Length: 240
Figure 1 (cartoon, one colour):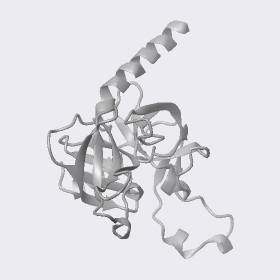
Figure 2 (cartoon, helix red, strand yellow):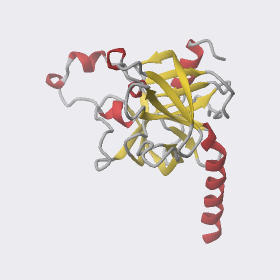
Figure 3 (cartoon, one colour):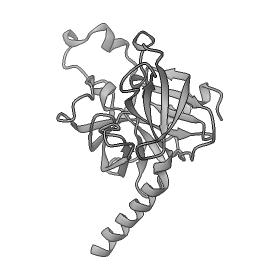
Figure 4 (spheres, one colour):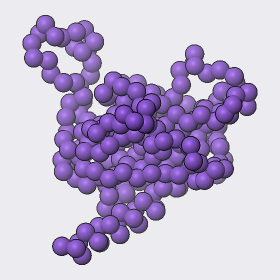
């Protein structure tokens, strides 16, 4: 019915308005480089308003850090966002997660959902920075559904296809999404469209083994890491 769809649209609009202050950009900042700030992906604020979750693959390797580069979190919106130097608190490469800490005033935080897996078919959305900061820092929201809960490793048809790396890789379930991901969306919060609670973190790059570096080649099928692994990371870092 038209009325039902209209109500859902208003509800999502209200949720997006509420959560966007908690979505941040992950970048590197170097006063010796032009441009000074280079965006690498998206993150979101959790816990006490001073901690940020993103993908581990969004962060540069130590060998990549040149010209006095520092990992930086961009907060706010527009052409002059607040820049905060970030400290790496903990990294979980197995689940492609990283926890950062920033200084300064507290930022509105996301509310995390329960640790259980969400239902297939659930309406979800992600908010992030799919084309970086080309036009300034303006968060973009995409809506979709959880298409499937699937293991991160695809079973091989016969033993001859098995490799040591595949055998040793830890199996865990991820969300397959009916949602298009673009460059810069890595690290975006995946949340329930009705409650705004985080269900996971968008992670199409590491799961699919590709790079989100070309706007013309988005992924029609995206993947996300369930929120339970965010809870584990925060607990291991001593955050309760």
